[in-house]
Length: 279
Length: 105
Image 1 (cartoon, rainbow over the protein chains, first blue to last red):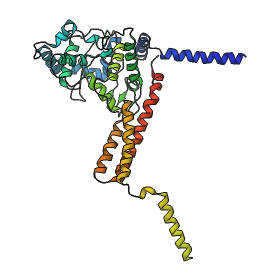
Image 2 (image 1 turned 180 degrees about the horizontal axis):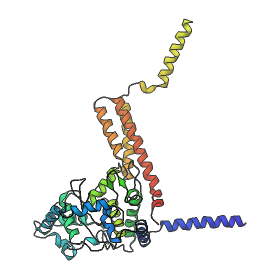
Image 3 (image 1 turned 135 degrees about the vertical axis):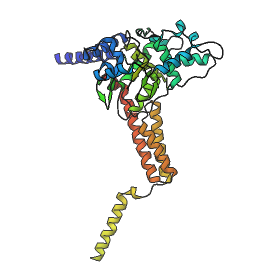
Image 4 (image 1 turned 45 degrees about the vertical axis):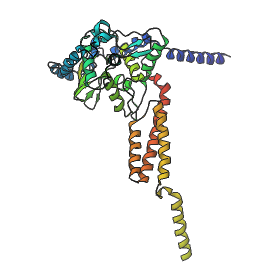
């Protein structure tokens, strides 16, 4: 009799644990995520996580400090400022599409759009702004988009991420999908985003030092020496996929937007540091 | 003795022929069958948003070999593509639930 009761209790306990594990609780995830990185890297100041590999490797940091005297993203920044202020053919500007005329708002992206029920990234918002004003969409992976987002990030430097997840089942579903994408293995190499950026930050892949997932989106867009140019968030995600020998999704695919939403929420409170420079 | 030897040779040749059907040259029909199977599997992987680059490369190599009338190579590449596509499908279905074990708690 006692055995039967014990077995029943064990089954019920297991079911309860599964139910808890399956519940979407962004705040609990946030606390656990932050605790994981701060405990693993106790010497790294919290706000320094946004500096990615430079927060993990002293020698690399010295190189970065030297490089940043003449930032390699400066040309993109200048170009972005000029593009941002240049009116469309109809006389309106990018600023007309955004709150506060688009200045100092980077930290609020991506956000959940209650009207459409989807995640809106800054890159998507910029292209929708263009299309609403009769202009063609820009490539999500090329220099013009990188320049525009570089300028907008620059106007938000130091502002803490402030990503909101409203208690709307669609927002929670998008968050959960982004979380699932982040932790799912893919590609012939069977790597998840978390394989590198949770399990192995600070370690080397060839000559590169892997960045921690905490704050990883804060420096975007970035100039990468490996690319010999600027790269958008879209480019970063596509490249990660192909590095695992997976076929990348279309830029701004729902999965990419959702994983950016998840990672940005995990970075809440950390300062925007973009545009950045990486090896 | 000669008849026994002749029978052994015939039996050996017959065994080799039966045991090694791949020695026979592949035909265009074989290639089309293998390609259709590979493309069907890759399409399913695409629906799961989990295609692999090597699968695409093997499919391209199969088509290139077929265009050069090298159907042995074309069939081999198409079969390789199907194997890879099926592995990516398995991965996607397995990860549909397995990802939860990796979540920071």
